[in-house]
Image 1: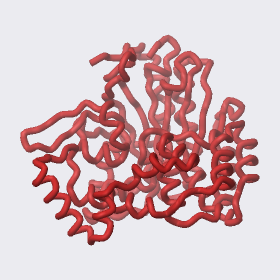
Image 2: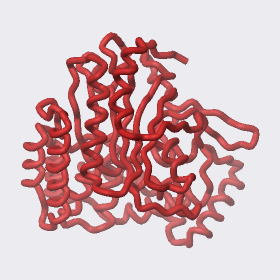
Image 3: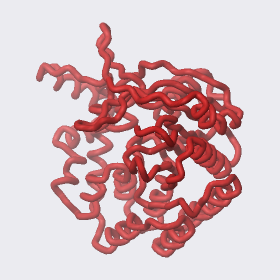
Length: 381
């Protein structure tokens, strides 16, 4: 496992300082995290980037690849009351083949679980991340902004069948699938539906789960990743239903392509997005107004918006983000090695299954992380 280079204590203190000022309580989270949950949240493609650990009980776990899910799980399992959590510790991720990236690295960050104005919280968290990244001394930083919910609001403005709109929103974080939707590639779209999925779609989920278990038993298959048959059956049924929704016509596909091509200084990008709105644009107008307020808040907190780009197609591999997103990049390190990153993930408690545990929360959730070794001007990772 490749370790990242350490940085001077005074540099780490400077990078940490803006996050200390956020008024968050220091917390820790288990290094071992449930593999099945992580894959459900991030997608099966993330498996190759995880350090997987198998226990005697057969339940697979992994070393935490990031702190957000680990801290959120701990927070909500402890009641989910409004709070800010600050963390500092090692995360672990398998480097891509042929890469020299560190596989064990220091992350620091803040996760805010709060009621109140989410736009103001978004602006504050992004500003904290920028200040922390800039404190490392790099002069080549830039900020890229995106928003999963902005794409969803744009899709809602179009006159699409609800199942098609849902499928399109789901494809946003999956470039190949999204391209297949836009190109009308029936062979790629058919991956949304298999014969097994079609058969299960007509059954109640309890029966679908029992059928899936029987198929595994007959084939001598042991499921991996800690996922239960009921969860897999539910996903297969969802895909089968969504695959019946039809496809985008040429005009609709062109409009979505135009949206995804928007990448400009934030105000100009918002103007371009507004000009593409479909007939049902109420949600999109509200989202754009929220973005203008968010940008104003960031500027008031010292974020140089002349270094920012709002890219409509920008997304992150971690599928639990459901609102605004950002990354701080260094020209020297390139876009594949962000110095800081974060975003909003209000829907994560539901995805974590907190409702099943009797935990309900009215808080939103937004956070950021910083890689000090990348922020440090003398660092190379």
